[in-house]
Amino acid sequence: MTTNKLDISDVFCEFLEVAVHNILYTRKLYPETIFIPKRKYGVVVYQSIHPEVNSYICDCMKAVNYHLRKSQLKQFFIIIQSGDHIFEKIVFDIVKMNSDIQSDIYLLELEKNIRNFCLKLNSSCSYTDSLPLDTTFIIQIATTELSSLEFNDNPAFEEFPWTHCGLNDSVIANPDIIPLQTVDIGYLNMQIFIETSSNY
Image (cartoon, rainbow, N blue to C red; front, side, top):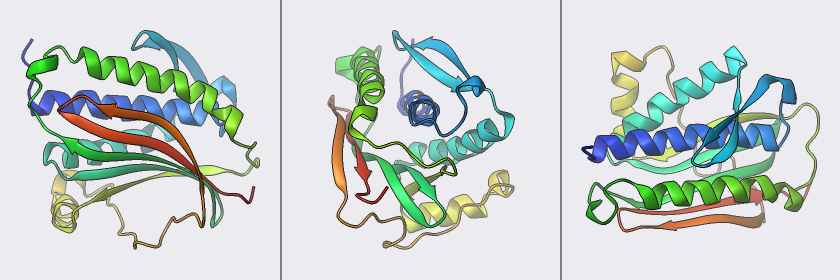
């Protein structure tokens, strides 16, 4: 198996996609009937079968993969909100990601970290409150201004353009922090945590 930067980007993007589906399931944003169980990373995960939900997630992942391959993805956010009020923000803070994976050529350490995250995600709900029935979600990313401009100018992505958010957009004032996973395996350094609002 050959493993390079593009392979890591694909694997990492797949992990983020799995994370989104499972967050929607564990936080009960949609009825359980639209999810099916699957085995991934050695644990049971849940995947949406709703066409519109899946289409939105898939389009978001195309942008994520684009910026990952250019080494310009800084943060990945899943925002859980109702109207203008944000209840929770799940943050994937990518400190470092590169293609030097000689110590983990089969990505076993990465898979172990992903498996641990999936297990912790299932138990994280005990630290969060129930959400209102009208709660929805959006995906946001933090990248460089140049990479964002290049993406939106790329004809391949013109049907799903991204809009610019200011630094103060999607901010939870004085959030409670729930740490989920720290990944530090040489070629990937990342913090995963949940910011929650005190006002549910």
